Image (cartoon, rainbow, N blue to C red; front, side):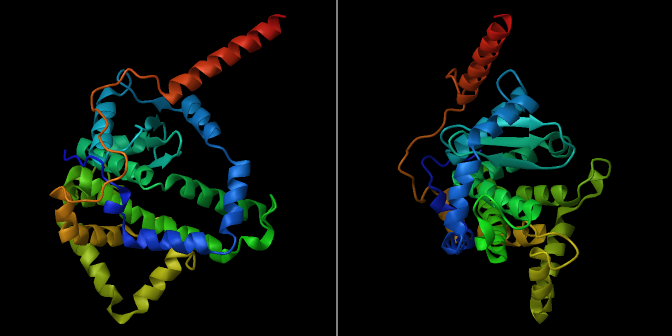
Length: 320
């Protein structure tokens, strides 16, 4: 697996991701949502929930996944090393959360469907979200959207300042952020067809009929889809589908065939070739994460000890 010591997110971040984030931050009401998110939502409760409901991956727990994850962490030079959890969920999905204590969560449904190399591609994609600083914005977006949906006329002092336009801006940024993370998956694997095959499997893969999937056919499907845009009408339909104008909700991810097209183009670009050659923008923090297991005490371990101490104190109070 290739490694990129000291690589900065700006070395591979997609321009559409950067542009969409700039537009989002400039949108009226964004600053208010940011303040209220910090006021009402915290990172630690999510960490407690992950620890309480899922399996934390480590040297003695899912050791194979742990080593694969550490290799991806080293490849993208993500510091500090995030925590990895496995969730009992049949949905083929993975996600990343947290900024001070970043975590990646993979569902059992994903582990059961994908090969080891494809799982690596997904892990690298999620680490891309952490590397690019997407996690806080993503959680803000989900919180703002859920608040708008559940409460209707927004509370928590946000009122009508959070317009439908801001929600659209959140969704547009979330979709464009995925393009950067597809690039992160490519950097870690150096195999755009592997990443594309992973997209195909997540889109409509079946364990039973996996032997009948054909990536070349999926690649042609992506090409045929792009040709639909020649008359311009399909672009209108795509906009409507992305933004809830059809029968379904607004989409948080671009269509897989769109993602494949963007990824394939970058894989054959001089920009990617320069990064592979070691000519890339570096961050202030140099060095990489050691792939060998580290005995250092993590934030998770400290939190676990706090919970043990709290339970011990509660038991003492009951006895008293």
